[in-house]
Structure formats: structure tokens, C-alpha cells
Image (cartoon, rainbow, N blue to C red; front, side, top):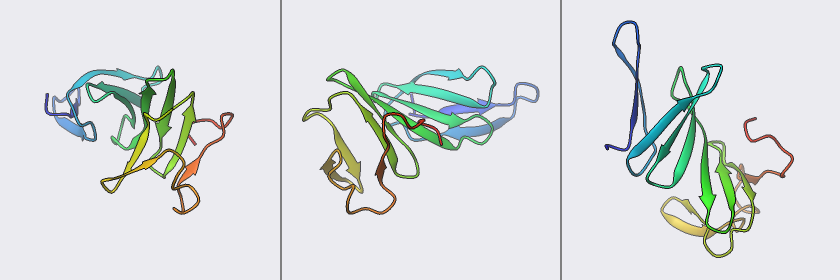
Length: 120
């Protein structure tokens, strides 16, 4: 309920990593089949992907109300699929901008083509 997920060493019982970034309660966690990544879901409406060993954030998945989704990457890249309509706003430094509005002006912010893999 503190908006985090905590990872523990199952053998030693020692706390290893705290995953932070969600803005509401974390509701579920799942590991990838190979154990290298994990996903958390939250009441904030996002799914976050992490590196399992370090807790490094990999991506944030946001489901759009108009039958689509967006993935935000830590390096500023993003992928938008479906129709965002007027419902999707990107929050950058507490200011709101419409999807794509800042692309020409912010170095490193890049919308990925639909055929580009999400994790690079």
C-alpha cells in the first residue's frame, strides 16, 4: 500500500531491492519466464517493467481509454498504439503536454515506430 514493491532473497531472507515509481498501491507482480525481468501493476493505472536483479526501470505501460496503449522508456523514447484522443497527456517536470507536442523540441524524446521492439 506504500506504492512500492520489495524484493527479498529467498535463501537468506534479506531485503535486496525496493521498486519505486508507482503513484498508488502496487496490486500485482510477475516475473518473466527466464527470471530476468519483472512487471508490477498498480492502482495508478500503469504496468511497469523492471530488471529483476537491480530494480532498474525498463518501461511504463499505460492503457489508453480509447482502445490503445503507450509505453514510456527511461531514455525518453515512447511508443503509442491506438487512438489517444484528448485523453493522453505526457507529464514532464509537472507540466502537461499533448502526445507528440514536444518531440521536435526535446533532444532524446522520441516516438518509436510501431514495428520497433519496445525494449531496446
